[in-house]
Every structure is written in C-alpha cells, then in structure tokens.
Image (cartoon, rainbow, N blue to C red):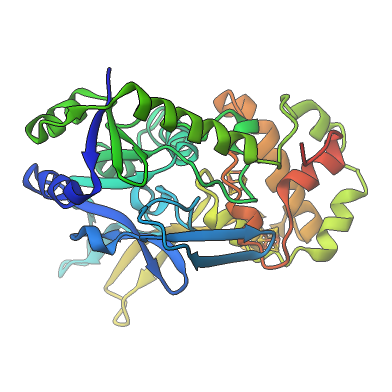
Length: 368
Ligand code: SF4
Ligand code: SF4
C-alpha cells in the first residue's frame, strides 16, 4: 500500500490519535546518557538531533543539530523488558487459619501499549520471543497478555551503529513485517506505511496526503545506504555443525580470559529468555511470593543441578551462550538466535565482539 506523508509538525497529533484510540504511548527518550523506552506524551520528548556512537564496550550519545527524532541505532533495551518482564510475581501462597495452604495466581495487568520507534532487528527478536513464549507446548500467560495489546510503530533504520550487523543476519535495516505502522523519517517528516488493519484504521482520521514518488525514492535510498554502511557480519551459514565440532577450540579459553561472566550481553540481548524462579517468604512465615526474574547462562546458579554446577567456569559459559545462540537455536526455532542488533558488543564492559568470536571459531571474517 502507498505511504502517506506526516509532516513533523503533526507528530503530536499522531501521538494524540494513538492516545485517543486507548494506547499508552511508549517511545525512545534520553535518560542517563542512553536512549531508553518509556511513557511518552509529547513529541518534544523524542531524542531530537541525537545520534549514538557505538563500538566494542562503548556507547555514547552526541548532538547533531538534526531535526530528526530517530537518527540513532538503538539503546540497551529492545522490546524484551516490555513483553518479558525482568521481574514478575507469578503466584502467592498463604497459610490459612486452618493450616491449609492457599495458592492464588497473579495475572498481569492488561494495558494497550503503542511502542514507537521499533527497529527491524527488534521486530525479528520479538518474532523469536513469540516462538518461545507463545508457540511451544505451553503458552506463557504473562507474555501473552502483554503481547496481544501491543501496537507497533516501526522506524526503518537509516543510522546504523558501527556495531550493527542486521544485514548479515537478514533482519534489517528495513522493517518488512510484524508492525502496525512503519515510518521512514526525513528532515521534513515521515512516510507512514500501514502494516495491519489496525494501523490503517488508526491513521485514517489523519487524512495524510500520499507520499510522492520522489519522497519514496529518497527514503529507499537512505535505507539502502544504511545497509551498505554496515561493516560487521556473522558468517551467513547455519553455524550449528561447525560450532559443535569445535567444542575444544582454543578460542573458548582465550575469550574466557577476558570475559567477566557479568551477563550484560544476555541482559541486553533482545532474544535471550533465560530466567530463574524464587520464593520470597514473608518474615512471619505465613505467606510467600513466587517470582520469576531474568537470569543468564553466565551465572553460577544457572547450570546448578542437584549439587553440581555443570558450567563452573567462564569458558564453558561463554561457549554455551555462543553455541546455543548461533547453533542449537536452529534446532529449536529454525534460525539463529542473533538478529544483528550489536547490543552485546557495545554493552560488554570488556568489548567482546560476537562477530569476532564466531569468526575465530567458525572461520570467515567478522568484517566485510
Ligand atoms: S547476540 Fe548480540 S547482536 Fe545478536 S541479537 Fe543478541 S545482543 Fe543482538
Ligand atoms: S561477554 Fe562481555 S557482557 Fe557477556 S558475560 Fe562476558 S564480559 Fe559480560
């Protein structure tokens, strides 16, 4: 379908339209030196004229003077914290007066959310999380409740960071599916392309003029240029067999000498879903709360089974992360677990680069 044109001066009207349709708007904003998603009521709150500089172990924001709201690649969060809560109570148990135990389920609040500024890599990651939480033998009720209420406004990426490699994973920089609306940003405004019936219905009252062929050509060229600027890459093929044939490769030892087992990479990764569950007991011992929280394959407890920590050292934990993410995900979900967002590279405190580690073990170059 043809795109409509929304001048930037009407972006507040777009936000108001979403709010009148019942959505709380979540959008990117600058907080503590990074771009994060939070409730956004005013167009002035977008990161206007801001770009990110990312490299291994480095994330910095700079002002550019550009009128654009989306001239950056990504921040530490994707959609993951919105649909897969970092900490979530699942049920409560209480001891009743007759000494029985009463269990009550805790259901998440359902709230329609419109998320503005979603990138192609994060849509691909959401699709993977859908596979995991919704399409296995059991549906996760908390994830399902939050997921079904999302209205997704994607933005085609025109400013990839040096750490991005979504072209090589086939996930970006253009958003091609999984959105309700997709925006292409220019200095003057936005080409708005519906991707669902809800998206089409939402913008109908705005009566947007049809984007011109010249505007569409410029937009296409900007996304193609963004793709060409990416220099990192992952070996394109399925790495499962080569990774599992190299479990004794010396590179695992080398990376373990640098890796802190801090788990930052798994926290920022939009596809990682490991979690642990704990019971938090009230001080009087009469009630407890069963809580699910994010965990990481880099923690001591993650592989603890019956008195033994299976992966007791960093070598085996890093190897587990890479062989699962780039290898056995193919068996579980039919594709790699990496969407090329580059977050694990920028937010690793010692700058470990997944593309370099994969190339070192599997062959091929990390830079193209
Ligand atoms: S492994 Fe790294 S680059 Fe790949 S999706 Fe996760 S955070 Fe992004
Ligand atoms: S690879 Fe980096 S971010 Fe991941 S656990 Fe090791 S030091 Fe932390």
